[in-house]
Length: 522
Image (cartoon, rainbow, N blue to C red):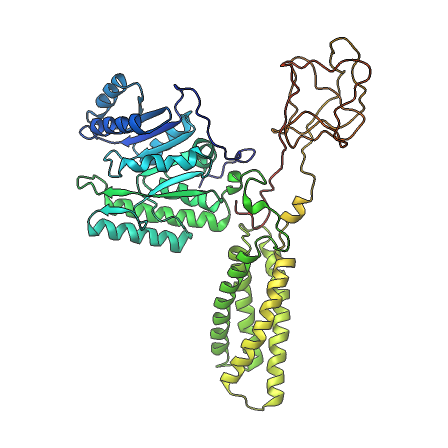
């Protein structure tokens, strides 16, 4: 699994401008292997549809996966005849490899792909890419399993498709409905950061890309499609299914171990509505309560089962202690991963040690309850013991959640939010810049302002000015520098400095994203 990292996070999503007429906004990739018969009708039909319905400039790229028939010649002829068509040749097979290669080299802000058989109705293409153009979503997929989709295919493929998506939901907690429909799109800025994390080069490429994007908190838009099965499809179903299951195991293992740098896919702080502070609603409380209740219910059943087993050859106190110890270790591990979203092995031993302290409190409550029951009755029934233990465990559960949330797995993002949000650029004081007809402004020493990339923005040929008496410039709105009093800079006895473009540079606020905090899944 690829774990290489890059600096920074994804930029904020924005509506794409119309741009120049000759600059393609959409690049539709058609991966092909020995498709000399279907390629030309597919490209011409797609080109005609885009010419009639798509309001932006576009390009169609034929990605040839080492075809051995006349496919390269057909693609070259189409490229020569149609200005919006280009041809890319790869010497290795693999749909995932073709998409990664072409998408990585494309300059279009929206990247899409579709199968050469055009099983998906092209009327879904504009709804597919519109949420990406508007900045609403990061990826978009066509879904054959949506309720309003209209699909014509045989029972064998229907069963395999639904069974595969059920496997994804059960093993990788995938929430998208259709992983393998050959009709997808992605924003280029997202692809640049997401694709290096995707390892597969074949048919599992789609699924891996979607799972990683969803786990990172990116928005996936689903479009119901009309789809007609291609009876002449050359896809080897058994081989593809086997490779997909291997991919599911590999990705699941990587996600469980926390070896993926999904923090690279985070948006700038404040771009996600979940970053907003809402009074009287602790962050993540609702999700954590649901996860804790599910884990707690399963742990209670596990605990009662163990108690019943241990009770066969030991006393009630010993059976209770053993059952509670084993279930507590499993409960802490499950809550660590599922409820509080802590990945990786870092801090696992400390968390288990703290969990044992919480276990001790629960042991005291349950043991005390059993002792009280024994004092009240010399030979209580087994069902009575279980009822007392359930009541004691309910009290212990409430206390366990509070201790887990506040002590064992605290949300350190709140503390991170209180840290200064600016990043002071490394800056060496330099002589004040040359002004038009008067002396330089009266400034004192002050840290250089924060810039969007974390480094000082150079002026034309002069070093950045040294800031002065007064508070730091407010850059939040991107306007000219204003002090704490809301007034502009006061200069000594001369005119303002001359900037290269006759305008003071504009800045953007920087909010660092702490990618190592537990529970941050974005």
